[in-house]
Image (cartoon, rainbow, N blue to C red; front, side, top):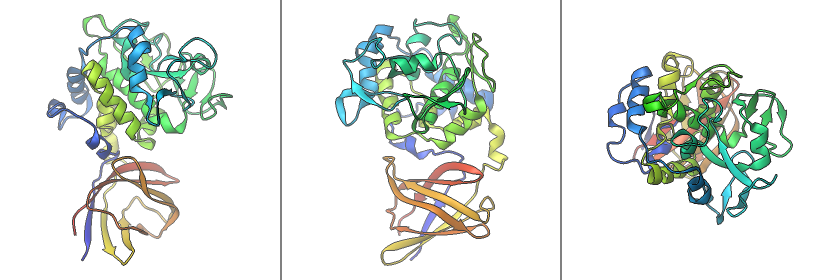
Length: 344
């Protein structure tokens, strides 16, 4: 008997958000929208959150949102990935402090509520690395940082490590939707430029769009979103629905070379299932394929899988009839979308 698999032609993973604790009906007003209409609807959903002080972030909120899942006494630092004692907050070179991912000087909001204390864009970081990042825009390139070795920087730009590129992008996009100039708040915008400081702008849009695709939400980021909702009573919609990034800032992508349609069928064999991926996107080339379960755990990985004329065949362990994430990477770039396995 065949197992039918439906791989929806979505640019980015929708399914990671399915395990997040999204309140029923929370995004109803945003459904079916795109562009400026979607941006406005999301703003109305997430604005007016419960505000906390800057000290509250230090004293308990960040210790909760960024707790190391393997050590409840520690927090995970954003740019280094280091697990560090919650009690080591301070100004010393190896202490942790509060990093405004949307640099507070890009709009001049300081450390005052709501912008300056919004936990959705404030993360624990190594104090000296935080200083190195400064108010740089986010973009690719530069020299490797001596301490945050996965990060690269220039005079005006900062490239975070691969594991949090998407996290950074979704925090920046959140800020641009949450803060639209209401009630004396700044009107923040994402731009495809760098070094626009002190304007209320952050870049670089083209790189941030790519990072959102390359690094989909993982369990740590989704859990963080849930915890912040418990405090602030608002969510980062781009963690729950990362596909909305392109729907707002790159709507033409739905008809570009980054949009795919697939027909996939599994033919069960004794120990494996054979999966055939067919698409005009696939060229005669080698691709890397990873399939994740809903907990962000890789259940299959294949390097250098050859595709012959639009058809790629792979053998993989039998998949249960649930939702998965599939990521395909090649010379043309990479994308992530959801994979639904229907029952036998």
